[in-house]
Amino acid sequence: MRVLVIGGAGFIGSHLVDRLLTDGHFVRVLDRSPPELHPYWIKTGQLQYVLGEFVDQFSMGEAVKDIHVAFHLVSTTIPATSIADMAFDVQSNLIGTLNFLKAAVDARIRRVLFVSSGGTVYGKTVVSPIKESAPTEPICSYGITKLAVEKYLCLFELLHGLPFIAFRLSNPFGEGQRPGAQGAIAAFVNRMLRGEPIEIWGDGSVVRDYIYIENAIDALVKGMEYAGSHRIFNLGSGEGRSLNELLEALEHVAGRKAKRNYVSSRAIDTPTNVLDIDLIRKEMGWVPRVTFEEGLARTWEWYREALAKETR
Image (cartoon, rainbow, N blue to C red):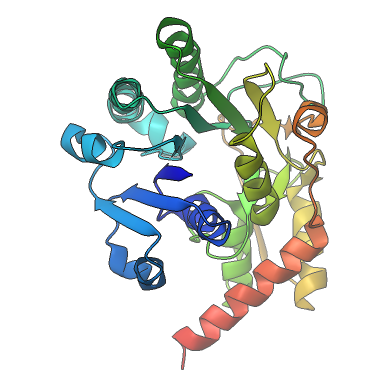
């Protein structure tokens, strides 16, 4: 199959591209990061790289040619930055997606798979775990934009017959995630390895659903062949852990204590967010194969080796 991965050089994208290449697919990547960051991809002969911006219509027109399935992984913001500049969030993410969907229709792409946000589209829910049918009341521009993209995907399927699947992803973690961006585990591991204090917003009781990247990629790939009628799927571990519990698990893996610095909580942080994953289990036969503990141990070891190379 010929697969386009928009945002293929990012954390989720690079893991997905690796998996698609291993499975024997032809892959085209659209990303603004230079291909030299992943030289082994080019050597396979199974991959083409389009260097360009998501919002650039020429680059997008080149990327969608002769493609069967497209993964949309791009987001130009995270929750905090989306609030700082809401207009940019909408212009880059929502308008960029509409231009992509029009190009996908013109190119007769068979299916679009979109990574939405299970962590932000629901807002402050009172029921846990959260089902796909729960009310969606996002409290940041990032979540509103993700939800709007889902609605436009529904509209494009209705008007143009463009099938889609939207995965409401929880908090992914794993090897290669960039510390300091989105992802508590990457930030915590990096600071622990460097002996730096870990900053925790609030008292550490905030509960989140953390999914190891290999498990997430398994689900995304299953979505390529899904033949059922559902379009929106939660994608998480189905388990919740507080920040304090997360730190305790990290301390166990690392064999050392973390330096903790508790600061004031933020308005955009919901107290609890755990996803119900019964629907994706039933419809796609997907289950998380790698346990949280094993994924955390793999992640710690990857960062430990990366830091060792950096300091040689």
